[in-house]
Image (tube, rainbow over all chains, first blue to last red; front, side, top):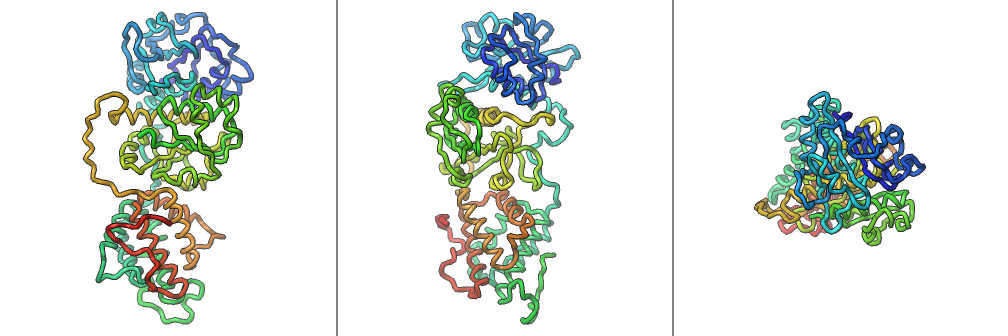
Length: 271
Length: 271
């Protein structure tokens, strides 16, 4: 899908923007760049530097005279635009554009062009009217002009998200909300052993008085359960409790076992 | 909401990226920029040129030495990160981050930091471990390094979308927010004080050897940050540490001085 999305830049003035556009494209997995009547030399040291390794896209870019040529084979052309123009046109958000892409690009010959205008004046009305729809990136109304490559970045990002949501990208978790380690979580029983151990320890160090509980254990339960402890984390916490109990009994860590009588529980962190 | 989102850039090398970040921020309605130990002069002709009218954000940027200072008052810090690190951390997508923001920023004292690393090497593991979660912008795995300002652009765009979806920006606002009153969350600084206290205590009881850390503190950080401790909960935990330290020093139970166990008024959270 991504290989059938073309970025079209019209009348670009700054080589740096062309390089930065190539980088943004390659970052998002796009590769097809067309330059319509650029007002600068596309390949300069600055564009190569800003491309930062994606200058092959600038090298491969097709340079044409007119928007017509750039989008001739495209089945959908979408122009990046500021808000309302004299003639209202179908206007979509970047997100809606992304959501539309899988269906638009379902056919093997389908091809989508995203068209961006000049740094200073955007797209002309004539150019906008050659587009099926306009896409507007929401901006601060007091400061609405995005850098060209930044605008490409946002739309290319939406393209990639749409592509990922369509099940690409390895089907992996790239799109998932959480990348939680697949460590086993502590069981209910392990948690209860921990809470019992915690309460004993807090009594031993004089922090907790069961006669005057003041919801201490309830609060510690709520806090701990909220974190959904892994088994290994619970083992660490229990190890801390055992070390604390030894201190409370007057024989901390190093000289363990030597002089004092064994205490009754000897919890070593395993439940 | 947007005014309580801070962009934090660590060790930036190129003034142009600082200027372009300011532009991306202002385009999306963000204004709070912090620069941690920049490796360049933030205000140069290049940064002003790339800011393209948003250089007031660079002028107003707070320049600090450490990440700690930059995020001390933040209730949520999210680090922009490449994918897997040695120690897996809660990982969210930019979109999930945006969806989470309205709730995160519901309280008047809440503040969110989005933290970005160096152009060449990103965020260090120590920096990443100071963040509650990591956000990964989906990229082409063969070319995954986004330009710094482009990464800011994408996340700032998601912030703005979330803000718009929450009914701001001119639309009628009619979401009745009857969420239960939230307890204030611990700030980053309060958490760091807690972690320092925790480490001291674990050394005192012989459980932790800084010469042989084995990721102990990283694991405890991850566990604790996952639970998003409230300020009052952190006060309880610190009270527990103080009581433990007294045991380790050989005089347990000597009451006063420990932050007392729960008390509905809660402590003031000062370290």
